[in-house]
Length: 289
Image (tube, rainbow, N blue to C red; front, side, top):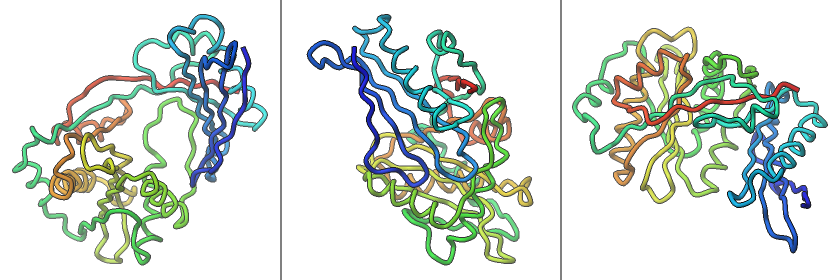
């Protein structure tokens, strides 16, 4: 077996990827591993591993060799932790290599065909004195970009249990780069924001990504409200408006996918209220270096 190291030719807006390919006799592919290396300020201690071995080649040491290469690279990069997953079901391979479970996640789906349109419209139409909603697709407009970037800190205190995470720095360049990356791969980034009317600043957001062909399932990227504006129902307001936006602008979308930490009780209740149905549970694993 030979392990060949590769590097992604074009880094992403806030990370880059390293890769290792395991090959056997005659260059026959056996498996592949990736290490995503975050570069955003506040995330320099983290790294994310992914290992995949062809079913016919498992239990022959291929996965272990690939994972060893990934962990060794993370150490050389002076990363503090490597995460893997989330994994559905048991993960004896990861546990055997020193990984431990750090975060339980519930994955849910909102089937658009069974969505209660009247109820969703009522949620989206609820009055929230002092606030208004604003939505867009693609990159945020220039005049809104600074407060939109600042609003991303709303995710800083999201429950993450024992996962080794820290607040990440967000600025205008980063939010624009992420929007550009979504567009470049052919998908559509949809955003609904809550604006504080007194100063015109964005104080909350809900993002999701629609497949480029407008069919299948869309994926939520995140929903957050700045601490000083919580307790007013803004998260449910924005999410309901996002559902209606997708329904009207992208009628071919069949469902909306989301995942939430089991300890994030408030967001799980919002999802349940809106009609999201749990599909499965998974666990994030972490190796402390």
